[in-house]
Length: 141
Image 1: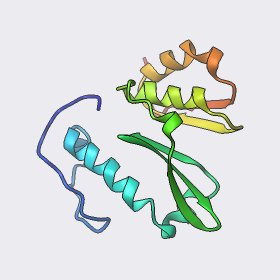
Image 2: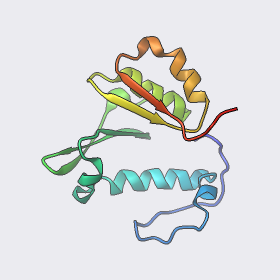
Image 3: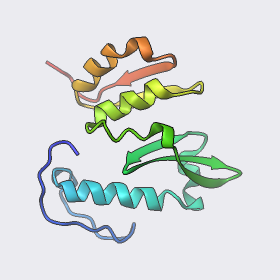
Image 4: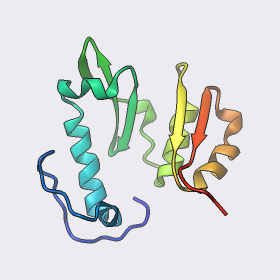
């Protein structure tokens, strides 16, 4: 993961676990980020999470590429072997890999505060065949 500041080992035991007062600071801790992704991959795989997904398909690429979707009001998590991109280490590269590999009609929205993704996206425009919307919550100078 990018910005590797090792930090203290971190474990997330469940959704009721007390959170740190400085969540943004935790995101600098590699162990916290890895624990958060592992937790989300398990927690989202429960049927009571189906309203949060709605009709969206969500891909999470960490160790495996998990695809989350709702079928008959049940959350279905599958492993998408074709979308596993272990050779791409940076999140921006993985995002563009997924966008370029889509084999179904989709509206893709990428929200980020990092300029790198714009450069990667522009360099791969020839491979993008689906509707793409880019949004940033930051004003760049």
